[in-house]
Image (cartoon, rainbow over all chains, first blue to last red; front, side, top):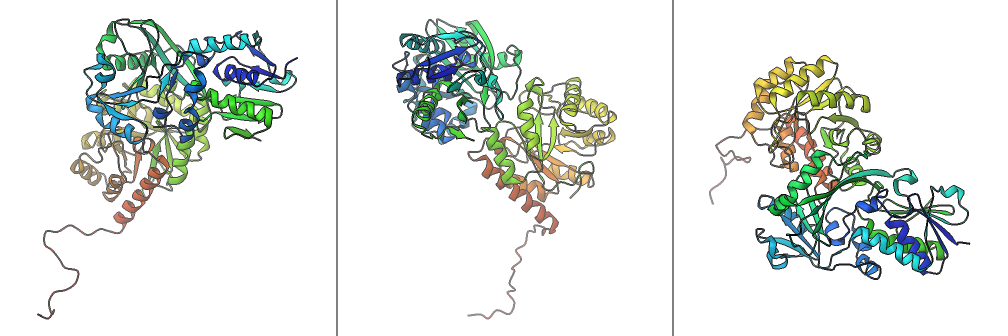
Length: 320
Length: 253
């Protein structure tokens, strides 16, 4: 007999399930695909734990709640704490100044001091406190951590209304909540074993901002577009051109990279782009993580568990 | 104020809806500024921007769909037809981009699309340059509003060719005109209104400001100031100093 049922094995559902299990509840976990995978948008994420950089456009809450993300992830999955490097092409230097003005905890550096292979870039910003992880590895590590606690993923298409007891609905867009909208994102994975970068690099560009996250074995994740669209069509030629051109501008050697993957999916977001815990009777909706799934899932899970166990009303909790 | 296809707007400020940090911030910018028109792009959403478009409709302002990102007349016409169905309005801001780097309009494609759309019952707002010949051709094609650029889209350079814009304004004194694109600061918007333009349309200057709602409000105030100054018949600049207090009769000390 379980104390709480979690529906959805994306980053929000898995982290919440683990948090609740750690706090002593018997957790039942259900996912339509039987576990994390390409059917959920967590699969397509970059895995940057970059609260300071996100502060350039996100509400201050995002930076504050995300500040402890790296520490929360570290016991679960490998977290690389090497900061974030932010660059701009020479003619977009003004973008760098503006980004610096709107963010904190950074310093100006010569990129080659950190990444010797980026010697053709003259200046950059270094966000030393930031970190990154491999999202797919993190998802499977969450599943493993849950399995070690006796929680396994059941494969089913579940509706919270049909499940007795407290339910955490972490199904993302499938939950069909009012005010929740899809924001399309497109990404690419490149294999470029000759290129060595040890930390995420963001390229500021007036039209095509880009980030590049190094993964193991010479892989690089390139992301991501942001379109107010519900289209689940494959990556458009335009998006691919933009992403690949920006990568090429960052380091021309990416022209020789193998395109391992092109992916598109939809991020669930509320109008303020901040995640919410919506309390609807015995159902808690954890949703709207937008582009901050890995950054904010720990805080979201913590506040959801606090609400279930002690009725604490955390800042992400919205009660009707 | 001149009207736009029979519609008198409560504000001379028109705002784009792209690049805001979130829809909530976008809404705050509209609320704080009282902007009367929201432009919406359809091109990149692959026809599936439903949830976002609903939010735009709920702003309660007039929607001006645009054909941003279209590089040919054919593409722009198709996008305009889709926009008419989606937003139930004959208004269309016609953009036919001719150059990828400067995003300047392709005058030939623009004219071709404007002719076709006007014949099809659209009320066309063509995004154009300050070129008077093209302006006349667009009016001949059935456009009753012109949208000359201030500077390239997103550049924030302001009114790049004041001479050309003044000549355009003077050449067609009765045609409603909106300065569209390139504005970066409220002072530039005020100047456009002082020059006799009827409205300004901008996006990036507000959306990418550190505080978009405050910047939108600043633009609204500037537009109001510029229009009031124009209506108040400003003095002409002159070379010779003219003291506001007479000097004759002042005693020597």
